Structure formats: structure tokens, C-alpha cells
Image (cartoon, rainbow, N blue to C red; front, side, top):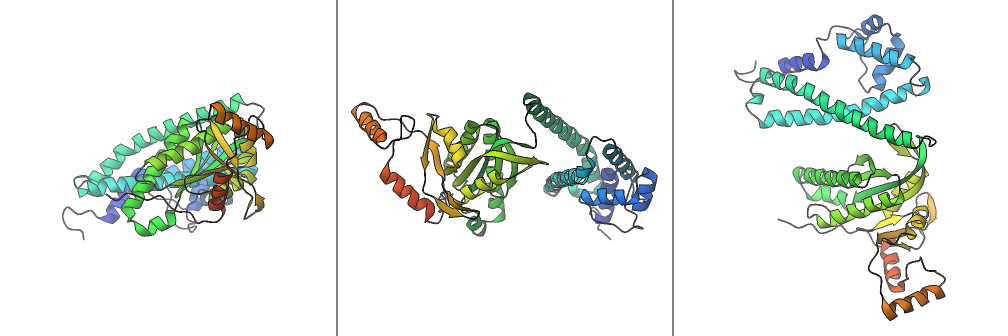
Length: 380
């Protein structure tokens, strides 16, 4: 028995379940299917696709809210609005995304309870907190969801002839260098702070330059952008922000442009794979781009694009990347004329960057032979 003032975990769990599930558990899966008028096998498939554990037929785990939810889901699927061939994929995507959101929210709630003794002193206090917090969370989630619907719908209407699943995009990966080594050198709190800071900076930069984050993968962000300039600016700004931030290691990036398959919030295709390979061979603080993107950026005066030597990576025998950086001040006067003459003799034309054989030789060597070296972190 718990001491006076202590929380009974069983009683608390039951109270939270009644609040979150909309009532007591009182039905089996078969009873839910019958009351909802949904075929038993269909209800089983929907339950599994949502990511919930399989339950025995005689296990009492469902509430009145489950009956309404299964009935609504079945009506939506049967209405023809969702193609039957993808209904389970849609359900899986919904379950996976909301599962991650719920995990984060429970962590936030538990932190709030454990750090505030007054709230965590009794199950009644915790119950009141959840009852008050839940409607507010629902309002925020509904608002964010509707805003994203409006944003994506606006893009779809602006490009009526474009296939929303397969379209041309710039795909970029940016990751923190030396992350695996870093996990062995710092504690959990410091690692959490680093990851939070990286996610915060990435979110700001991608939003500022009209891109969209596909997902955060630990120490890496995968994003897409509609234009070459937006993609380049995201990678450059992220690299610059990380370099100026004492709490973050150096980052590296890989960008590629072309047709991608967008499916349930994720992206697939050879362009995505190519961007990942470019990232894997980039040096700390550098950005590598594929031939397609390099061709687009080469014409823009604000960028400097240099072709690197071919390298072999998984899936590509002779991958020839180009490095991307901001253009430096161009020389003027007699020195500019001599460089222009050298460029013309080499057949590079007016729009090509002036070659620097020594710099190119050194950059090629470090890009293909030396292991990555993380940025030094200042100790306070």
C-alpha cells in the first residue's frame, strides 16, 4: 500500500486511461467490431496498422470511443475518398506520426510532474493537470494541422499540372560531423542539449528559406526545396550557423536535384540516395552537389561551384561531385584581366569560375582520402 501522500501507480494509470481513452475499458475486440458494424478482420487490420499491440479476442481493452473511431475510419475508407490499395499504408503513416507525437508529449508531461512536487503529490492533481492540458494540446494540434493543410493545398493549386507524388525537387542532407564519437564523450544531458540545438537551428533555417523538413534522423536533417537557390541557401546557412555556434560540431551537406517520389511524408528515389552519398564523402564545413544542381548554380554570381575529382561510393562507381560555397570578391584591374585570359585559354568561358590549381589539388586530396575531423568544442 502507498504511504499517505504517495501516488498509487495503478490508481493513477486507471484515472489517466479514463481521461485519455474517453471512459472505462469494457469491450473485447470482437464486441467493438460487432457494435461498430465493421467486419472482424477489417477491424483487426486497422488496429495493427495503427501500430497498436495485438490483443486476444477475449481481452477487455476497448471503450465506447473505440467503437466510434472504428466506425468512422471504416466509413472514411468505404466512401471512396481513399483508394483501397493504400488504405493500410495511410493508416500506418497516421499511426507512426501520432505515436512519435504522443511519446514526446508524455515525456513533456512526466517532466512537468516530476519537477513540480505540488502537481505530483497526488493522483487527483495529476488528473486535473491532464484534464486541463489535453483540450489545449488538441487545439494546438488542430491549428498546426490546418495550417499545414493550407500550405500544402496552396502549393498543389499553384501547380495543377504537377504530379504531387513525383515532382522535381532539391533534396538535401545536413549532418553533424563526429556525432558517434561525441556520444561517447558527453553525458546524456549535454547530448540532448546538442540535439535540441541542432533541431532548432535546422528548423529555423529551413523555414526561412522556404524548404520543408522531411525528417530529423538523430544527428542529421533531411529536407527538400522547390528551387536550386532555396536548397543552396539552406545548406550554406546551416553550415554557417553551426560554425558560429559554440555548442554545435561542424556540419557537412550533400544536395541533389531531380525527380523524387513523395509518399506519406517521406521521400524516395535515386536523387535522395545521391544526396545521401554526397553527404557521406563531404568534409566538415563543406557542401557537395550533384551535376544537375551544379549546372543550375553555376550561372548564379552569388555562388562558387568547383568540380571535384571522381570518387567511388556505394552505388556509384565514378561519382563526380562539385563543391558549393558563397562567391568571394572578384579581383579587379590587371589581375582580373590575366585571370580572365587564363580562363579563356582553358576554354572555361565567361561564366565559369577562375581555376585555382593549387587549391583544387588540396581540396581533392582531403575530400577523398582523409577521415572527417570534427570541429573543436569549447569547454566552459
